[in-house]
Image (cartoon, helix red, strand yellow):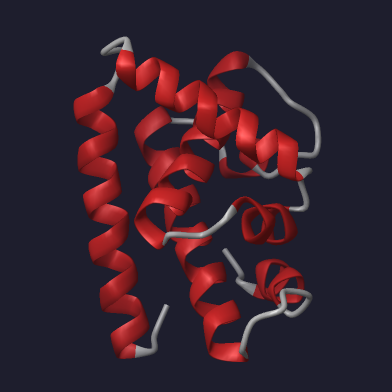
Length: 128
C-alpha cells in the first residue's frame, strides 16, 4: 500500500508539509484499521462508488477514526480522500449514531486507541 496517492492529496492541503504528511499517515492508518476490523478488501474501500453496506460502513469508520484519533477536520479528510466534505460529515454522523445505539462502541474505542497509538509511533519514528 503506497502513500503516494494520499500524499498527492495532502500536498493540496493548506498545511505545512510535515502536518500534511502526518494527516496522510493518520488517514492511511485509520483505513488499515477499518479494512482489518470490517474484513473488506482494501481496493473496495478506496473505490469512488459507495459499494456494499459493509464496505461503506468500513469507509465511514475509517473517516471517523481519522477524525477522532488524528483530530483531522472534515476539509482535511475531504481533500485526502477525494470525497466531498458533506460525505465525510455524513459518515461521522452515521458512526456517532451507531455508537450511541451501542452497535459497536467498544470496537470503535479500541480501534481509535490503536490508530492513535500507531500514528504517534509512526510519526515519531518517521517510518511507515
